[in-house]
Each structure stands twice: as C-alpha cells, then as structure tokens.
Image (cartoon, rainbow, N blue to C red; front, side, top):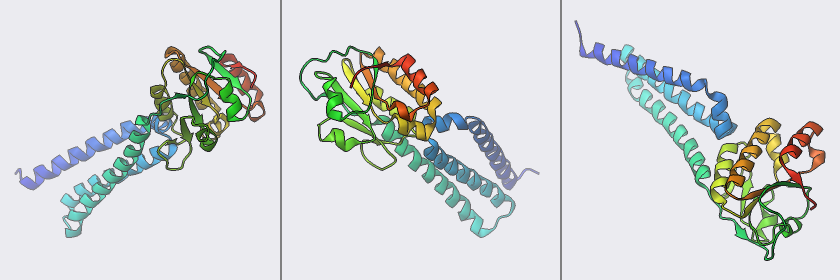
Length: 248
C-alpha cells in the first residue's frame, strides 16, 4: 500500500541520489575549479558542498530513523553548508568585479609602442619614466611604492583589502586587469616570482600569455618586472620568446 511516508522517503532518496550525482560530476572538475578560484577558495567551497551533502543524508536518515533531534539537525547542517558556500562565493564575486582605472602619472611621450616587454627590477619611478604619457596600472606586491606616486594598483596578497586579489586566483586577477585597461594603457606587473611561488611556473606562464594576448587585442601593453636570477634558464627562455627586454 502506498503511504505518504513511503512517497516522502522515495522523494528524499531520489533528491539525495541526484545531489550525490551532481557532487560527483563537480568533483571531476576539481583541478579546473582550483585553477579558476584558487586553492583556498576551492577548499572552502568543497567544504560547504560536503556539509550540504551531509545535511541531505541526515534528512534521508531522519525518514528512516525519526528521532526528534534529527528533525532539526538536518536543517542546521544544510544551512551551515549553504552559508559556507555563499561566504566563499561572495569573496570571489567581489574580486572578479573589482576594477581599477589606469591613469597618466607622468607627462611626456613614451617611446614604447603597444607590446609586451620585460625590464629588470628598478625603482617604480624609473619604471614609470619609461611610460611617460601612458595610462598606467600596477599589479604589484609592493602597493605603497606605487601609491605614493599616485599610480592605480591591484595588490597581489592574501590580506583583506579593497584592491587585493589572492596570488592563487589567477582567473579573477586576469579578469580584473583586462576589464580595467583600455587603449594606450600599460600594465606594470612586478610580482612574477610571487605568482610562481604560489601557482608554479606553468600556470603563471599561461596566465601571462593570456594577459598579453588580451591586452594587445585592446590596444594596450604590458611591462613585466623580472629578475633573471629568480627564474630557471628554461623558464626565462620561455618568457623571452614572448616578451622583449628593454633597458630599465
């Protein structure tokens, strides 16, 4: 005989099986999600998903073993999972939408045309002198050095700051830079070694190529601050095939 309790249990089992299937499919994209959102954020999101899944499991068990405390426990667990996921995604949304408008810092006319360049470490003032008359945006590990020169910047750091993006969130960083820059602007990126430290060279190199292509397509340019001693010879050679050295 079909009963209300039986139908409810069947519906809960089907819902739980569906959620389990979705979680399994998402798990096959773990590496992609980690690369897109960063290791720390991906871990928090997966923690939220797991807690949410456990909440639904408790909900099913509640229909099999109808203990009084489980009627509340399943809702509490599901709510906690949703809060964890929402908190993680809010941070990602803020960083993806963040934009900083480049501005002209030094008057004059730069000899640099639109392109992709590298320069050895030098003072921000010296680097900016190469970009006179250009709109500039700094992507940096040392924001104060640019802030005192009135250079708009994005800070590569794990600290909480309105202009900060975690070094492991290469996709949001790329999105923010591209959406901030227009024609005749230059992006100065001086945190290459820091990005390599947190992501490895290959993901960082792919990020730099994507950044270069996107900026050139917009009529902008990029200037990497690179210390040759901080990279392996093979790594430096790969960069030199895509970016031209200029004297700093």
